[in-house]
Length: 106
Image (cartoon, rainbow, N blue to C red; front, side):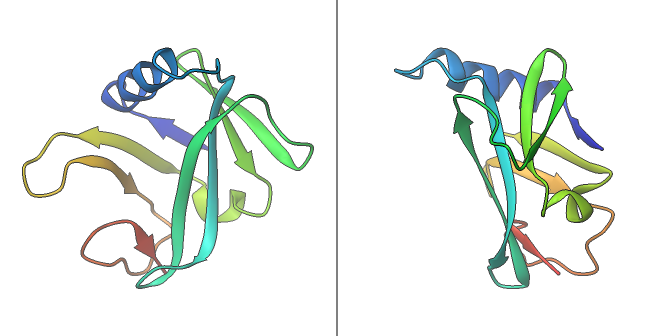
C-alpha cells in the first residue's frame, strides 16, 4: 500500500530515537487543504487508533487513517536533502496534480 525508501526510514527512526516519549510509529493522514485540494500530514504517534490500519515498512510501523487509504495506495515516501526543498517527498500515483512544494495534491 505505502512504500518508504531507506532514506525515509532512517529519517523517521532518527526522529523516533530523539523523541522524549517513545513513539510506536508514524501516523499518516490525508486532509482537505493545501494548494491543490489535499495535503499530507504526518507525525510520530505512540500507538494506532481504532480507525487506522497498521502497515510495517522495514520494521517501522505506519498508522494510516482509514479515510486516507484510498488516496495513498501505491505512494512512495522519500526523504531528500536537496538544497531547494529538503524533507519528505511523496510520489503518489493517485494524484492528478500537485503544488510546486509537493506537499499537497488533487
